[in-house]
Structure formats: C-alpha cells, structure tokens
Image (cartoon, rainbow, N blue to C red):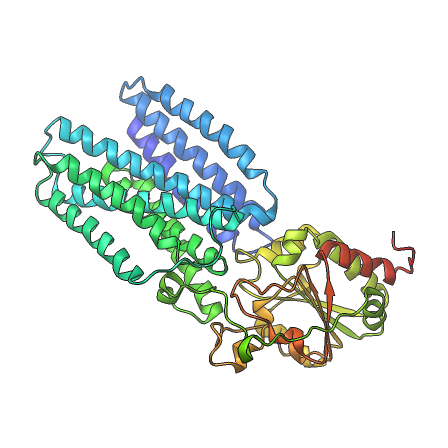
Length: 474
C-alpha cells in the first residue's frame, strides 16, 4: 500500500467516524459512543496528516506533534469546566478554530505571493482564501465576545448594545471587506494585494465584534451555533486551499450541523435568523402603567412541601437557575422523595431552556433521573392542566404567558411550557430580576403562583428535608 493510499484511507475512516459521531450523539443512549467516535476520528485525521508529511520527506512533522501537545495541554483543562460553562467553552473552541483557519489562509497567501506563484493563486484558490480569512477571523472575535457575554465578564455588557445606523454600519464594513476580496481575486499579485489582504483581516476582526455586540445573552446559544457554522465553512475553504478532502467533509459536517441547530433553536423561539442577529433582543423593557410595580406572593418551603406531598402529579420545569446553582442532585433527592409518596413526577423540558440545546437533559441525566421522565414541551403541555403543582426551578422566559397573550411582548409567539395551567405554581428564583428577555414574567404575578426566593440548590434541598421529615433546618 502506498503512503498516499494509506493517508486517504485514514481520512476516509476518519470522515465516516465523524458522521457516526454526529449520528450517535443525537440519542442519549448512544451519546457516549458518539464522543469516543469523534475523538477517534480526530486522532486518525492527525495520524493521516503526519503520515502524509513523513511520506513526502518532510521534517516539520515535529512542529505538528508539538502543536498537538500544546493543544492538548490547553484543551484538557478547558474540558474540566462545569456544565454551566460548556457554552462559553464551546465558544472558545470555535474561536480557536476560526483563528486557525484564518492563520493558515494568511500563511498560504503570503507564501504564494512571496513566490510570485501565479499558478497557485488561481481565481478559485483566491476566492477560497478570502472566504477562509473572512469567516475565520470573524468567527474568532465573534466567538471570544460571545464567550465573554456568557461568562458575564464585568466589562462586557450582557444586554444588547445598540446605536443609530448600527446595521447599516455593519453591512457597510462587511461590504468593504467583500470589495477588497473581489479586488484580490482579480489582481492577486498586485503590489497593493498584501495591504488589501490585511484590510480584509482587520475588517473581519472588527465585524466579528460588531456583529455580537447588539445581541443579548438570551440569544447567545443560537449565536454560538451560527458561529459554529461559520467556523465549519472556513474549514471547508481551508480544505480547498490545502487540497485536503477531510477538511472539506469535516468542515461541511460542522457547518451544516451548526446551521441545522440554529434553525431548530430559532423555531423553538418562533424567531428568524434576522431577528436573532439584528433584533437587539433582550433589552430591558420599561414597566407598564408608568412604572407601576407588580407584587409577588411569597410562601414558605414548609407550606410548599405540604402541598407537593398531597399532589398526584407534580411537573418540574428546570431552567438556567438550576444549572447555575448546580441543583440537579438535590432535584434528584426531591424526585425520589415524591415518588416514594406515590406522587407522579415529570420534568418539562423546553428546547432552549438553559444556555444550550439539551442543557437540562444533560444536567438531569448527570443526576441519574430516568430519561423517560424527561418530557418535551409539546408532549408535557397536554398534561399540565391535570398537574396539581408546577415547580419552576430557575426558569423564566420559557414559562412566560406573555408569549401567548401579549402582542407587544418581545417574546410573543414563542412556544412556551404551559405552567400557568397547573392548579398551583411554585417558582424558585434567585431574585426579582427579569430573565434574559428583559421583561417581567406574568406567571409570577398570578393568584395561583407562589415564589420561593433563594438559591435553587438551597431551596430544593430544604424542600427535600421537609418531605423527609427533617424539621431541624440543617
């Protein structure tokens, strides 16, 4: 078997494993196998690249091994983050991927330009190079800013930052970058070509920041998946530049899966891409009736425990507050205690609850709550009118009835979990602040709703102690 045949065989097996990885990760029962498949695919891809370098007599494979070791040294600690930090860690991964694509494209252009290699700088290759750096550097800065917003870095505003003519300015900058790109395609070896290339890089870096600034924290999961799509497309372009079939197929898988995920999330919020990217969703809304403040009704944990232990059906609606407090194991305790009393317990899962699709499923699976009791929104809504108690744990916008009734609300039309149709509602909330959408939740002011203010882990733990008969408070 020739070295080239071996390399292509390794790339082919790697591609198949990437495809199987995506397929297996779509099901909780096979998700772990999907992760191992993806890891194996990447190892084979690196092995194939090394084999190709060594077969051509190259000596720079030590640089590849060194980069591999450096990447592993950085990547391992990044992987040790809590589940609440996975979205921002994912954004950082996209940033690194975009930066890698941009740097490779930059190196290739200046290599060919320095060689005055007109045969290498064909129209197709220059188009691919421009696409690679444009999408790569845009993804780099955009993903860094998205990660900062999700991490709630104090100097990065969580709410949208807008100014007059913002979208026009953004499109003008992007148009200028495209115009420079067209000029490069037409005259790749012109004396001014390196300056034009540098201009595309700077404009791409700026556009990545300006694209994310007007987007609020509520839309960051969707934005991250869109940036994932951009990173995949930049990898496709890089594959064409390097004549690497694996990069083309893996990048296409990455780009298409990111796009599909974005579409799923937009559908779950009943919003369009345009609204997500340019709608400045999440700006704080002024209170109605000239600033009139509505009143919450609080209740005690002991009273809530007494109501729940008398219930036939309790529906728990988890949200980001549960994730932040790492309350899933206390929720499991509560679940077990209610089940022992003959109470039917179900979990209502909204597609965009938390900060990434499947966030709640993963957290509850970590606490070993049976997957059969995790019920998707469309199915659970039919059961909520029969529910004696709906227990909201750190969820907000995904249970706000304004999405159904208030045409002036920014979340109007968004599918929600119908928690307001339960006979009694208890809501665990850290504070009286609004959710990511920046609006009050009408559910929390209904006569049937009682607030349990506090950290979700502490409140749920106290509920479990009361149900277990421990009245000591310890």
